[in-house]
Length: 113
Length: 111
Image 1 (cartoon, one colour):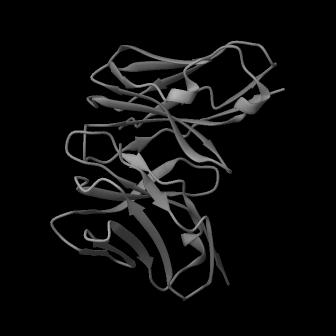
Image 2 (cartoon, helix red, strand yellow):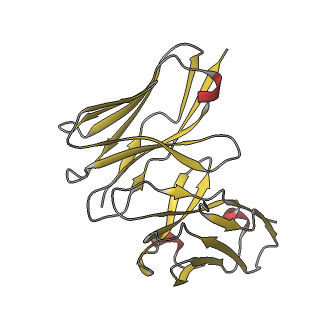
């Protein structure tokens, strides 16, 4: 039974590079989330899709972060250009919909040098 | 929109004691309050939830209390064990909207 799959698990990028993180949600789920997790800020919502439509794109993260969901089983998060302050764990999650359990992937640890 | 505040960023208890993590929310329409646990190096996973039609729910050593009037809910872990050490996230949502998470509480259970 596949949960949320994220690739890669680890990514090292040089400042200014473009990186693309990938996520496969649980089959049949309608909601998909991208979060950034740091020790100081905790969980920060980057993007939220419902039935492939972008519902929220995280305000402060708009300029260099772009999430897309071209089909119901695959989403990407592009960071362009990367900066050292982007170093964090990026989590993808999905759920059936409102008021239902959210399933998380294991995350991608991004290090920008 | 909804805002969820998690009051304790860290919490340390001795093994066998109880731990309490408190959260508040802002939207009176929120009706679903789940809790998630993240162990070191792992993703978050669901542990327990409570819906607004009840004010208490228990699952083994976990108890969730909900005070709708105060817009406050809490997770109580009784008889803590070292394996309870983790980051705990509270969350809130309403029927038509996405779940909103708190910033997490790091619980350390020492022997």
